Image (cartoon, rainbow, N blue to C red):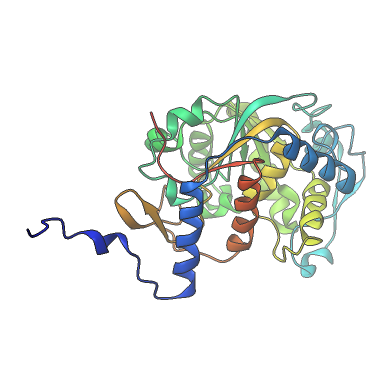
Amino acid sequence: MICRSLNFTKQIWLFNNSDAERIYLYANLLQKHHWKASPQHLDNFRRELNAETNVSTDRDLILTQTNVQLDQEMPCYYVTKRFWKQTNFVATKDFMSTLPKESPLKGKRYEKCAIIGNSGSLQKSTCGSQIDGMDFVFRCNGAPLEAFISDAGKRTDFLSFNPSILYKRFGGLVNESMVESYISFMNQYDSMVWYPCFGSRQLVEPCLKAISYRDRIDSQLVIANPSHYVSIWEFWKRRGLRKKPSTGLYLINLAATMCNEIHLYGFWPFPIQLREAGVQETAYHYFNNLPFTSHHSSDGEFRILLQMHMLGTVNLHTGTCKQ
């Protein structure tokens, strides 16, 4: 009797290089591991962060009238040394007036949080309703919502917004047309928008200009405290992570101080992935066709996240979501 099913070898991946083999092993490990939250491990991670970084979400995440003084010099920390030699920004009365008296996140704690990365692995994931059912949702760098709700959800409570986006998408807000486009785009969110204005000295003024339109934007616009980011960066640098943390990894550290359970979506950093139908190509972003980049230590960070997943500290969702 001749077997009519001749598809067995389609299930076997022929490895062309070590990268393909590593991705295969990562994917299978995640698919076969039944995730279970470990409150003890998350609490240990939280305690370690608090003890070693000497920063807190309540006090240091956002620049406020409490942690910034009038005429204080504001250095730019995130970038290469050539920016450190430039003139520091000085906190004027006008600047102080843009800051809240205290952090809007002070005292906030949530049961289940989701952090939405921008990986193309979210495409056709149908995770949107699961994401929107969380108690608090973090998103990265102005990802669009409306056309991707079924996969990436819509709920947004905290949005990071890199000031470089002001040039990439909105021409540096140099004319009214660009300003209107920026305001229209930002009004798809109803959340806190966190601007790391002090990542680069030449981006400070454009970033503050973007925030000056806060009366025309539904969200609450706040400025990142660079000292908080640097403390997290140093924390991981001491553990061997050479490149500066991605926004996603930074938000995981933030969520650890605010959430009892952390779920990650869109954190698959590779150009291929395993799905039920077999090996599939994966876009860099779920919402555009940008090529893959090595700006961050994506593979190194993913190995960290994979181990945190195995320890029950974060739930790393990489496949489709059950409805």
